[in-house]
Image (cartoon, rainbow, N blue to C red; front, side, top):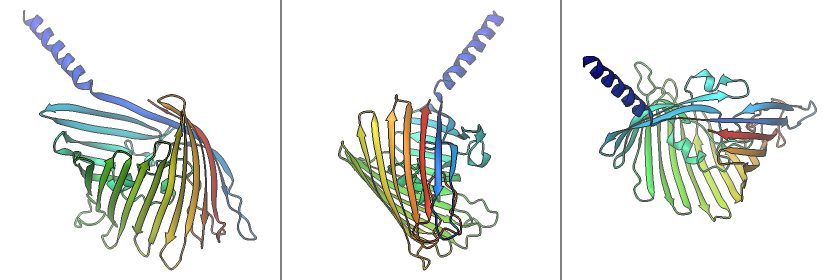
Length: 344
């Protein structure tokens, strides 16, 4: 009799473990493209920066992730995400070899009170422009070619996200610098507010990042918005960046997303206005075509060109920094890529 009871108990415990794991999902993205990059020729010495290579994560970063939620009752859930970046062209780890370099957080989510999460996670200001930008910070003309990415992913951070309050949601993040004896050193503070109502989307974001000694900091503000006309989504983003030292510049993006059938045409223009005495202005034009082969598989082609002024060193997604010989308005890089993204 005791043996039967023990067996039943073991079966029950195994069933409970299986049920507990049933709300954990495994997901991922494999994204590979062939990218051709060329550098603009400048001066009598010239510059031939031509390069053709296979690139991982052109549309979306290749990744393998685990996420889950446990219902704790009364509208409260425990949630977690572990997401590892992959360089699909070589099989190596992305994000400098960090095991779960894309995201690693755990938290609690309430249907009425919002969510609080702790760990390595995306900053509010970065998402405030990334989720609106036509290229979704990918392709040859990625927004991060120009827009600041301070607070993109924040280690040792606590983030609170409000529940939907009508058309409005907001979140705030605090990242511990974890420098002994100086709580301000390396500290990251971010916040954003979103208004989404029908075809209208507006996001406002803020990020402040102290340097390693808390003697200087970078401050970034962004406002982004879109209006969906159904046949076309019009997009505009403005960024104000006060960096460490004398860094002081503005970003303006105008873009569009045009769906037709399984196809989508994306276009953007970004202007960098350097407010420092160096006046290192730049601009980028980009166009992308995507084709939905299925709900999970997308083929794409993308092209972009960056033009620099007064020795600015901005470049397209897969290019390296322009060389010192590249001076004048023609200096910059051009890029074309063609690839395939599969999500699972």
